[in-house]
Amino acid sequence: MARPDEPAAEFLLVNNNNTRTKFALANRSGILRDEQIAIETRHLDEERVRSALEGWRYQRVAMASVVPTKAEVLREIFRREGRETVEVSSRVALGVAVDFPSPESVGADRLANAAAIAGLGGPVPAIVVDFGTAVTFDIIAEGPAYIGGVIAPGLDLMRDYLHQRTALLPQIDLREPPAAIGRSTIDAMLSGAVHGYRGLVREILAQVTAELASRRPPRVIATGGHAELIAAGLPEIEAVDPLLTMRGIAFVAALNFPTLS
Image (cartoon, rainbow, N blue to C red; front, side):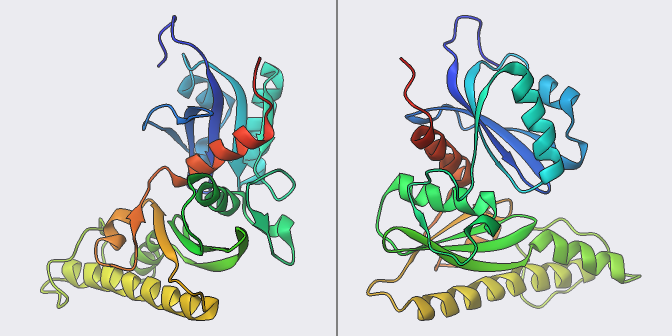
C-alpha cells in the first residue's frame, strides 16, 4: 500500500488471465516493486478489485486480458474512475511487429510477452515459454517480429485431469521428484508430471529451433507459475522472469501513452 505522501505511479498494470488476475504498479522506468496483487479470475468483481487496490495511487491503466467477460468488469471500473486505459492488442504500438495471418486472434498475454522481449532488448530470435493455464511458446524473430507459437495443455491441467479421471490417483502438489523411478504412487505421479513435462518442452523447443534455422540459437526465457520448477531441469532455458508479462504490459503503456507534463 502506498503512503499518503508517496507520488502516484503513472501506470496500473493488469494481467487478466484465466486463472488469476494480477495487478502491479509501474512508471516508464519499469515496475516499481516486485510485488503483485492477485485475485482468482473466477471471483473477480468490482468489490474485490477495489478492495485489492485500496491505497494504490496511479494515473493510467494498461491491461492485457484473455477473459472477455472479466475484461468488461475491469473496463467499467476504470471508466467510472475516469482512468485512461490502453489494452494490449495488435491494434496498439507493441515495439514488435505482428507477422501473423490473423493478428487480432493472438492472445494479449502472448503479445505482452513479445513486447517484453522488445522492451528488454538483446538479440533475437527469442522464445518465451509461459507456464500458465496453458503453456505457450511465443517466437520473436528478427525485426523484431512476433511470428507465432505453440500452445499445449498446462501442467496443472494435466495433473488435475489425471486425478479427476482415475479413481485411485490422488491430487498432488507439484515439486521435484526424488527419482525417475517412483517408489510410491505420489512419486510416480511426480516423475510423470515433471520429467514428462520437461520432455514436452524440450521437444517443442527443438522443433521450433530447427524450423527457425537461425544463424544463432534462440534465447529462451520462461515465465509463469511453474517456470522455476520445469526450468531447473532444462538447460535450454536461459532465464526465468516471473514478471516478464507485466514488463511487456508496462512497455506497451510507455509506448502508447504520451509523457505526462
